[in-house]
Image (cartoon, rainbow, N blue to C red; front, side, top):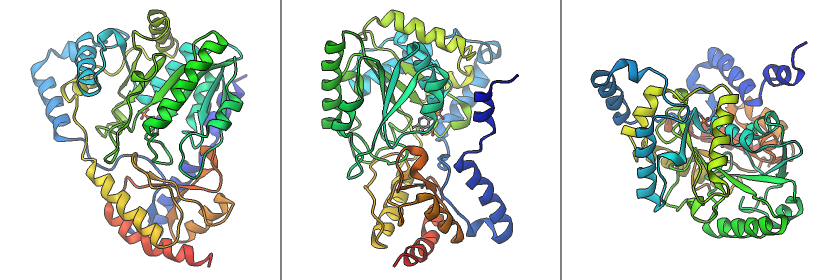
Length: 393
Ligand code: PLP
């Protein structure tokens, strides 16, 4: 007998996958240039030259046995030290190598945190719209995901709804800012309000409530401050990834920060190591640990995403679509033009526009448009968005 739960996870195709397959079929029929695929969040901006240079230098100059060998489970100590220093320089923090645990990207970072924390009956709260994989990761760790409904005027946190859901079973709260799918960055005011409330609840319930900050889009932000959450709240895990910042999603590399100020910090760090062990991660890819250390502080050319955001946002607003202006990540999350976002996305497909219903992100009545695509695709797609809007007039 196999695990029915795992069978279900592995055999159910996601809406995004379905769209991707549809897009391939349609491209064969009418040419790829006539299909406007806005479904997947795969960075289209290449990794910076510094990445290529770092790979070549490491391969040419370092001992291949070390380059390709196992590192210690938490990652190479020199790499962790370099990355900690880079974080400290940027955010005024005080981390050392022993506060970092190298991972296989943000997905691995958050799943390791969930597994490190969850005991039977524990609840993990997140805010819609949210990354759908949270449910799968939290449940695999034995926890229960609780979703706070979206505050659709601005996609900041609805604190009334949050207060209805937080209780003594709450083990952790997960935030993702800049956000997939809304592109919204939580303001400092939101972070202060959230962390003040968590401090109050920690006192009231007499135990730690951890804050897990899922940050693969930290560097993809347009002229706004993305508050560094450990500075506001001691019990914070930072789950970082180079998938988007250096356009390295296939290389699987990132880290978790466990600050010294966290309650029981040493035991928590050991539990993160234990979670990585139980998940069979062994260690993060050795070559890419060295590469990201050499490229510390660098990013891909984010200005391309900003140009795409401006073109698409301004274009859709002119056509009458309603959308909160995103300040980061590479997604737009407008309202669908009919209450049923699935029906709206089906109509969009007739115009060869591949966009994703918001229901899976916990936010019905909205659609996600992933604009990490060639700028020409956006320009060419606007008449199709116009025709689609006209169908509703
Ligand atoms: N968290 C969010 C909000 C994401 O959008 C993604 C990927 O798109 C991830 C985590 C996983 O990122 P990674 O490729 O670093 O595992």
